[in-house]
Length: 78
Image (tube, rainbow, N blue to C red; front, side, top):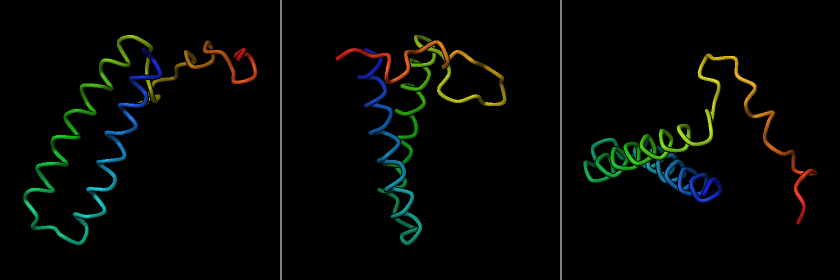
């Protein structure tokens, strides 16, 4: 579930990034702006869901060491 949420977050973030690049040169494109807003909302919902289940994605000004509790890449058996 954690990996699935991270992939969905990454996809929404990628779409937002690409739309921002497009909007840099097409500022008056209302359809692109609406799509950006849609992906921003989707990202916010997914981020909230992820953080409720697995903890913060970023520090956001808080000093948290929760990420240290996850297994390190070399600790994961394949």
